[in-house]
Structures are given as C-alpha cells and as structure tokens.
Length: 374
Ligand code: G3I
Image (cartoon, rainbow, N blue to C red; front, side, top):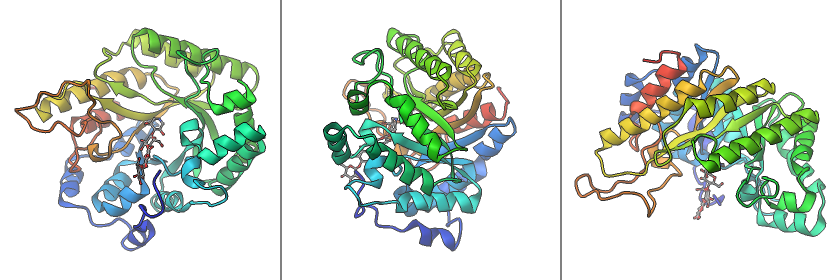
C-alpha cells in the first residue's frame, strides 16, 4: 500500500501557482515533438486519458505538464481503491484523489472512477468483516462515501473490477470474497447500489484478457458476453465496459476476426466501451531500444486499427504515460540476453520512455485517434 508517509509532497502547492509547473528539458522536447493525444481523439469524438498517481505527478513536474497537455481524462492508478481510501477502518485518506480532482477541474479534464469493488483493492479489515458479518452495508457505506464525494467529477465508474475467472471461478465468475459471501448476484447488487448514489454516472464492469486468439482469452470473451447479456436482460443498471487491453507481445498476433465481433456484441447490447488500461508487455528484450519501440508501436497500431472501427468505443486510456512508472516488469521467463544493450528494464510499453521522450507508440496513438491510419 502507498502510505501517507510515502506520499509526502503536496500536489496542490505545486498546482496552484504556477498552474502547470516547469517542464523538465526532456518533457519540453517531447512537447515540441508531439501533438496532444486528447485533441487528436476529440477530432473523432473520443477521448484519451492515462492512469496517474498523485505522488508521481507531485514529484515530477515534467510528467504533470505532459499529462495535462495530452489527456482529457485521468484514472487514479491506486488512490481510489478502497484499500487506499480506508486502509484502516474509519480512517479516510482522500487527499491524493482530491488532488487529482483539482488537476482535472483546473484543466478541464474528467476523472475515471477506478475502482469501487475489487478484492485486490479491498483492505484486509473489510474482507474479514464481510466474511464475518455478511453485511452488504459495509459495501454500501463505502460506495456512498466515495460516490457522493466525487459526484460530478467522476463521469464513469469501474463498479466491479475483474469479475471473470474462467479457469478457477464458479460458473466463470471469480471466487472472490464478495462472491463467497453474497453469491453471484453481488455484481448486480453492486451496480444497483452504485446507481443509487451516482444517478448520472456511466457504470461499468472492467476486465482483462479479451484480446488474443487463444483458448483462455476465447473463454473469457464468451463468459464476459454471457454476463453482460444476463445483466442487460435483467435490467441491471450497467452502462459500459472497460476492456483493459494489457497487450502482450508473447501472445500475438492480434486478429480482427477475434476482437471485432466481441466488441460489436458489446455495442449491440447498448453498452459503451472504454479501452481502460492500454500498455504492452514485451517478452523479448534482446533487441535495440528502437526495435523494441517499433514492436510495441506495431502492436498498438494493430489493436487500435481494429478497436477504433467500433463506434461503441468512446475512449482510450493508457496505464501510465512513462515507462518509468509502468507496473510491467521484466520477468524471469522473458528473453533477456542483452550483452549488447545493457539492462533491458524498464519494459517499454507506454507512450513515453523513462525520460519522458515520446516514442513511436505516441505517434501511433496520435494517428489512430485522429483517424489518420497511415
Ligand atoms: O506504496 C507502497 C510502498 O510504501 C510499499 O513499500 C510497497 C511494498 O509492496 O507497496 C507500495 O504500494 C504498492 C502500490 O501499488 C503503490 O506502488 C502496492 O504494494 C501495489 O499492490 C500497488 O499495485 C497496484 C495494483 O494495481 C494494486 O492496486 C499497481 O500500481 C497498479 O498498476 C495496479 O493496477 C491494476 C488495476 O488496478 C486493475 N487492472 C490491473 C492493473 C495492473 O495490475
């Protein structure tokens, strides 16, 4: 968990004067070389956003300046999760989210509410209490507190995060604490509860591994569609879905025949789609940085060429801006004989490198989001 102590810098001071802090030389270079991804997306009626952390924005002025320039929407990467807001029962830590809200308000950006209910984002005390008391009020109180506080700021909410598990789930639903305590209907219950406190927000389910032509992803697509169909048939207040899109160069190739029908079916249910966590995991780190960057950019191009043909897709969000902060790490099974190029880390799967220089992935995003597919 990110602790209060770790979060020492105050963003608000940085923010209010001057509003956009001085960019580092690297960021200035990037700014001159690139257009705004959100402006590009707006030309086709969509938005572009990124996951961010308040502490990183506070300590890296270049990052903050570029985030504000590039994005129309910010997703708190960790601060809105229950275990960040209420790590200890009854002790609330809203400051990092409030600071992101300030950035959004001052710069005309929207906030994406990530996420209300996710076992991995739930504090241990709440999981214990849910198992012991089996009382939905614990969840309802959390929803009420967060949804009321950010009403008007968060346009969309990932109400339930990652409910699908086709490998060890029960009827393809993850056997998490919520399922164990309240049964499969915890999902609709969460959506109804969210609707009560956020009447105007777009309520979403957010999940991963829908992209590739392999049996696991195929089962996951099928299970997700079945869940969505059931929820819509039952009149549950579900407005959209997040497809995370953690792309993976070890799983390719991406196929239109696989992805397009899946998205079409979601669109036909009347749901909007947001690409919520786009990044690319590399598997082979032995080539030069420029070759690696081309592979990443090509994967993103292939994905966006399919996805942006679907009108239900409203926006694209990357899971961070700079490789410096990527959650993706070089793993033991990856190919890393890198005598020629040195340490292969970090993974290069985001639009900017670790020094905030825009990479080919940025160009691809800009082209595709603006509808220029060449
Ligand atoms: O800040 C503490 C630090 O003080 C402590 O020393 C360290 C020890 O582990 O932990 C630090 O907190 C970590 C936090 O990120 C901030 O870095 C947590 O352990 C770590 O669990 C947390 O990871 C986040 C994870 O969600 C869980 O909240 C990742 O940054 C974030 O990228 C990841 O995002 C998820 C999405 O929410 C859902 N989809 C998948 C995606 C990637 O896993």
